[in-house]
Image (cartoon, rainbow, N blue to C red; front, side, top):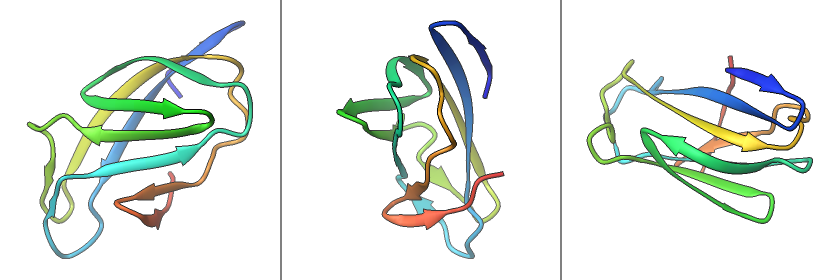
Length: 96
C-alpha cells in the first residue's frame, strides 16, 4: 500500500512475470471485501463494477518478458480490508 488516511488510500502495484514465456497483454483482477472504491489510477486502465476490479495494461507496459515487471497505482476511497486474492490473465497469483 502506498499511503492511507481516514477516508481513503493509495496503492502501488507491481505485476511480475514469473513464468518462462513472454506475457503479451496483462489483466490483473481482484474483488474487494469491504467498502473500497477506486477513484483514480495511473499506468493502467482500472475499472470497478461493484466490488470487482480489473486493471489492464496501458499499452506501452503490456509486454512482460520472463522476470519482467510493470507498475501501476491507484487511489481509492474507503478503508482497505484484508488483502484480496488476485488473478493475472485469469490465473491465481501470489502477493508479496
